[in-house]
Image (tube, rainbow, N blue to C red; front, side, top):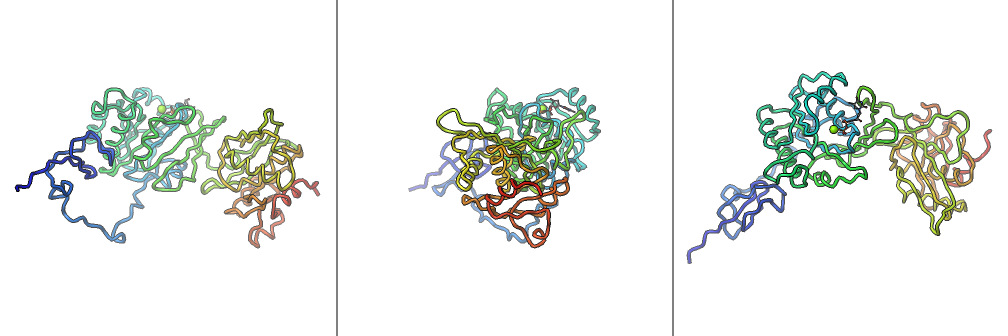
Length: 452
Ligand code: TYD
Ligand code: MG
């Protein structure tokens, strides 16, 4: 019997085959990539695809390190893991008005690259952008502006301009007729983002995609882009003028680093020594419920003021209100306090705040958190100019923390006279300013003892 020729459809992006044409590949998510090919029962291998695939010895591959360049901002470089990586796609999310366009315009003008930078704005006119650049005092000779959200126009421009950095402000204004008429739909965003990401990967450029995020942090649309890009950064704002940039995902660096800026008359300026930013200046004694902690944020050590308030619960169950420190951590520390010191907290509502609005996720904050809750509940103020650091176990032991010496040094540099924390090496044991404590009970007795 004559073998019947089979027609199959093969995705030109990932190679998946299907018996019928599909608009979008279920495997790689690419659009309009299915092409008709002849195939057999073996899955429709074309001659080319049937060639034996070759791997490479990893040792023979040149590393991509060294293909980074500076974004022009020390803080942005830090969050990116040491600068902008070529072929990287970076998503920057944040609420409207937080400073995404400002940051990227500043970076467009100052990035450490010789090539052209294309700033595509679907939100502002060229005149508005120029006004902003002038206000910021930027010289933008390398920066090209294009005000459109039309994907085909943008890609045509990319081909002729061949920029090395492309900024899309914002993904929500991108559209293509290929994916429906309404800009901002998830389909539109994914289709357009995919095309632009493919372009930068092929042309050794870097792509920034700006995404607006709604108030409660839900980025219904842009969230779906997270898996397509290499790096996801979120801009956060506190009640003050400071802005934090955090990495939620980073293929080329750590996600622990944060960038800190303040927004002022002349745009965003980096806060290179943020150690004082999260402390409250006070004359005289501390109020009850306030403790100063030395915590790590990526490669930096910061001193932060932890504030606690306890009030009898109104309902039958008590609650923890804490959005800067994880509520589960607060509940656990409160339970440890209750058990080891017999301090009743289970009938109290506990409110926790971190001055300056920083979110603290580091375990080293736990002992200071316990001290602030203790102080709030008992009404006994903690001693002034004292920094506390340490992790707590459920059995109320104080555990060692990473980089103890750096925490002690930061505290001393900022004029704090005493450091209470876990025992360190022999060097710290000799330091008179450091009081090593083994457990929570010992720590509390040290901080509540009357000054000498
Ligand atoms: P913008 O970068 O437009 O925010 P986004 O792109 O995230 O929506 O920032 C706009 C805000 O920043 C706006 O409220 C004005 C303020 N701003 C300053 O305070 N100083 C400045 O120099 C600039 C450029 C903006
Ligand atoms: Mg903007």
